[in-house]
Amino acid sequence: MPQPANAPDSQNTTDALISHRREISDLKQRIKNRRLQVTGLYGTPIAFVALLLLCAGLKVFIWLHTSMPDALTGIFVGIGFFLAVATIAQFAVEFSKDSPWRDPKTPVRDLRLDLDLAEEHRVLESRRMTPPTLERQFSYKERLPAEIARLRKESRHYRRVHLFMQWLLFITSAAISAVTAWYDPPQPAKGALIALGFIVTVVTAAAGYFKPRERAFNLQQTADNMEQHATALELGIAPYSDVDDETNLQSFATTVEKLRAEQRMREQQLDQPQQGQQQVI
Image (tube, rainbow, N blue to C red; front, side):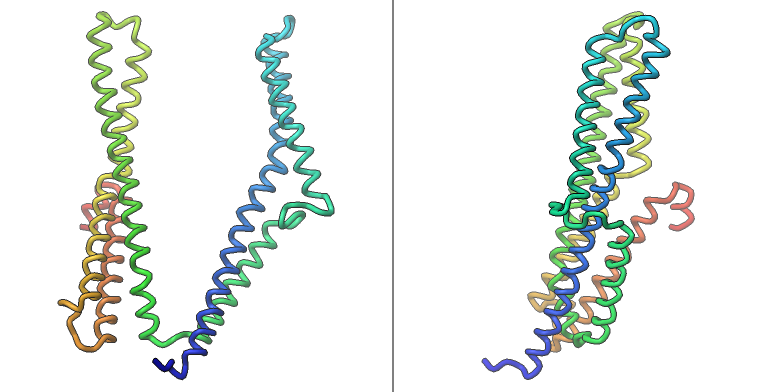
């Protein structure tokens, strides 16, 4: 089958855009790694000094005229030794000539500047090498399964959170009744009752504020609707039974974007207080 005349240009455009995306992804990972390195580089000596101050404070205010317990002294010595070794090792790696780190002695702001420049370069190149509308619509259709998988993954996450909260409420509520019945009067178990009541209050408030059950339902519903439209487009059935593929793709992209906009609106409504939700509805 002969290739279209513009196939090499299209391939070059695709390769260039992929190269830009790889460069941006690499810079983002380098920024994350560098932040961790800087955090460890300055965090470990600060933690070492804080440990010394804590040890000195405990000695002055609690054990001024006596010796500290041997177990506590051993814990402080062990943690201090670890922090000291970690500090020396990180500074040695940072300032060595053959550092295994990719960006030693490089400020994070310089990497962020490189990232901003790379993103600007990608935008300019994308504008100059923008593929035709039909190709973008085909690419949009091919990216949809990943979006559906993401929505279902988030839906499963919120569903697990909701189930965990519900089981925690069940167990703690039952435990309160059991402890109260076992200890009558409940003086020996007063601390346990306070802790269980605190857990029930916190979990109930968190479930009412974050609404994991509603979020899971909305995400699953949006994913199912997207998959239904993708299947209809693939099979060429209504509402994508037109003989013109470009018309079907245009209608498909419009419908999916409408579904995504509705999902974002539902998420915003869940993030608002109850009074604000009634006003929006």
